[in-house]
Amino acid sequence: MYRRSYGNTLERLRIAVLSKHDLSTLGPGDKLHTHDKIMALAKQTQVILFTPYNYASGDMQSHMKIIQFSPPGPRFALTLTVALFAHRKDYDCIYTRDPLLIALAVPLKAFGKAMIIEMNGIPSLETEIRRRTRKVRAPSLTPLICGLMRMAETIAIRSADMVLPVTKKMRMTIIRDYKANPRRVIVVPNSVDTTVFRPLEDKRVEIRSALGIEGETVVLYLGTFSDRWRGSEQLFQIAEAIQRKRTDVVFLVVGSGPLLAEMKVKAKSVNSNKVLFVGAVDHRNVPLYINAADMYVYDAIQVPTRLVEKQGSCPTKILEAMSCGRPVIAPGLPDLEDILRESKGAFSVSSVNEVELSIERLANAPELARSMGAEARRYVKLTHDLTRLTRSTVDLISEVLSSREVKPGG
Image (cartoon, rainbow, N blue to C red; front, side, top):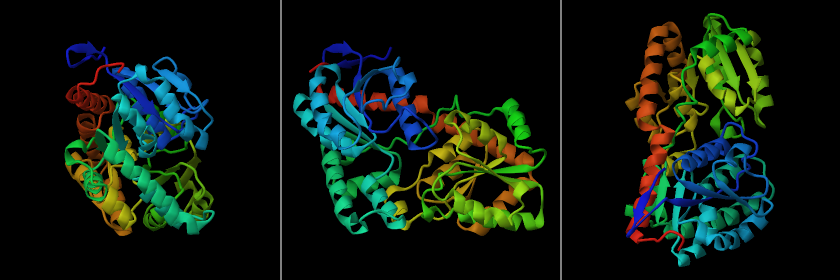
């Protein structure tokens, strides 16, 4: 049991976690990562989860207290402050991955509650790019919507006792653009559960057999097919180019989304036996498909400049592939470049041609692919393990509370 001293008392740290994600149904992506982070926190300290009705998964019930108090949407936002006030004696600080929810919780600072935000993105910026690259209702309202979000982010960040961005680049943006106190902004990178995402050689044989794959080299492409800017169609240009020269490379495409049908049309020119679409898979099976592959190609070669400049990059999908012992091919973006270089388990690329050359290099040298994968696994366990980083987060929160001399149940 994790215990920490506050002033002259010794009490277990109690964290109110705010989430508006529907965690009752999980799939690869942000909902799953939010679920895993909350569960990891609950294994190390006491958690009380505030969420809309029926938004908590069944496995959360036995690990934490869950307060479900409203339907999702605007009513949840309007009643969140009331719910937090009603249960104010049950927690010592408020934690969330959503700065907009912290903005709503700011009144609880009057009761001595510390505010902690983990930021794996900047919502106003991501919303702006999404609305400008997709068909949306009332596109003319984009500046107003993003402006209001930016205002809420500013309130949240300046009110927070600690902000935990996942990249160095994002830390710089938070300090520069939101005028945050640098001492309160600490980088805690994205993490991966290395006990779930791990090498599974026995399962590798099974799933390759089920997919009809024999001795071919398998290139994994794990995507959501939701944003056109990611340039997902480039993978199929690469597949076509490689298969003009050789037939021993299979492209395994996992995931679904609004652009998937379009991607399948673009893939028709490629040997259908060498591009396998498996669609959406249960999140529990993602490690199996990663293990079925020999390498992983990140699903974005070129990222919008503003997104890179403001947020940097530390994709969880890359960490998951590395944790399974697979070499990675990814763009050398700010922050991500450090991971690719330090892991010794990845190739940094800057063009479609470099992706193609890297795939062929690994396909021609299976021993190199295996050794790079082993290096990647060691690196992730050391620097991005979920349990290790959650422990660091709990320690940081405890230090914040100790410095404030917060009394539990205040």
